Amino acid sequence: MKCKRAICSATALCILMGSCSSTSAETTREDSTDAAAAGGALCSDVDVYADGLEKTGPNGLVFRILRSDLNPPDRGVNTFYVELLQDGAKTDDYRLVAEPIMPLHGHGTFPTTFEASADETSQYELGPMDLFMSGRWEIQIDAVELDNEAADAVDTITFAFCLEG
Image (cartoon, rainbow, N blue to C red; front, side):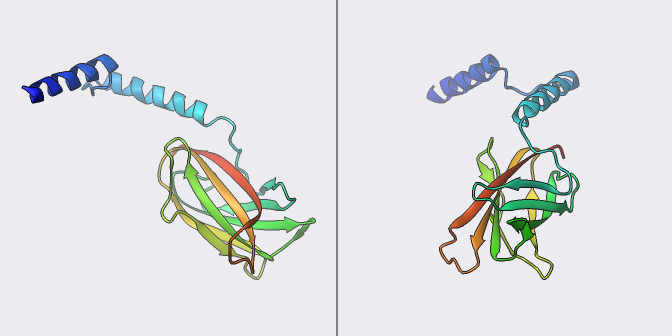
């Protein structure tokens, strides 16, 4: 009797909340439109991607995305090529640690962070990172001194992108 009551309660709850699936294509289209509209609101206040997009951290380091494998960044595997400027000049005195997260869902990627040291041209290659869902992604990038084993960030910025995929 308890099982029947639980099934009836779950069914009633489903009906009351309107979350049961429908076989109607029209309903599915409306649900998709509503989801896109909600995503639009969640994707407000994001960075508009262009090669050369830069942000200055609170301690004065400038993080500049030179380019991205997917331009603009989109759902799927993304690699960002970044340079770091200190007092207006490129620097390779740091390693960068990037952590992509999807704040609405409370998850990131696997692996959770991506680390890079500068190459011979003072560029950092961050990725490949699988941004596997559409929606708002935030990529926090920390600059850490090369000899700092504790990984304390000297400066930090966050780029936010709305992926359509």
